[in-house]
Image 1: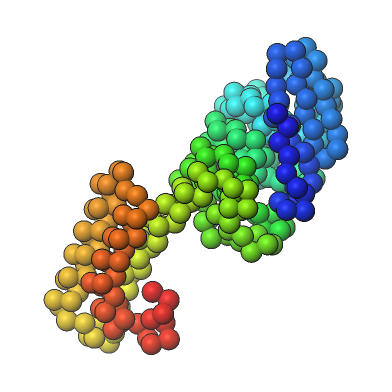
Image 2: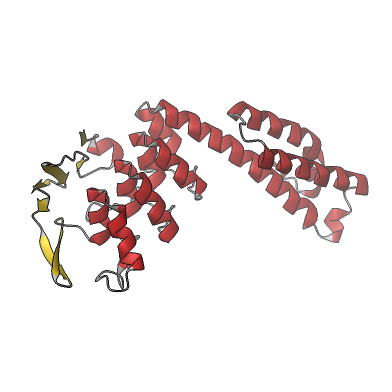
Length: 273
């Protein structure tokens, strides 16, 4: 199955082939096609002890593993002291290819679930972006790679990052009708907004200097802190919350703490809450 989308729409100058079989695997990127027959690819050759390891053309060991969908080979680079790539592997985790894509970008496009997790756990930057503002979350969302979308968000991917078209990952998913990703991104955003409201309120109340803190009564402070605790416990203990649940919880939260927070903020800053 050839993975292909308009270059002008998603800033994709290469075509990524995801088709593999036991007899032949075809990889197409930036106009270069590499055919693998019988499991032996054409490419430049590197020596690994007495054996010969062949990397796909125009790849390093990290991107080679991604195109080949070989997480075990990537793991060996980190854990085998004798591996010829061990010294350079960390530097390659965030290195962009000639098309401007990082290893996480490629893994997201191709839906490499295990490799995405390995890259994240080994230190790949989840919020690195291309020159046109595309993050790995943009790519996962527009390709409809739900497991990758979830992993990236769990590791702190920025839901608000905008590309050159002004699109966040959600809008990129909308453009390609990736409904499942759209719903999940809405859910994640609603949860994040509630979390940020709690965090912002706690910081405002607990970090206020004496002059500002005097604007609220002890009772108001107690009620506000208790509300923060209550909503945080709800977040921590509610496993099946829906997007609507998060929105409703935030509305109830703001109804209680909003007036107190506004007292503590300067008039021109109150609108940022």
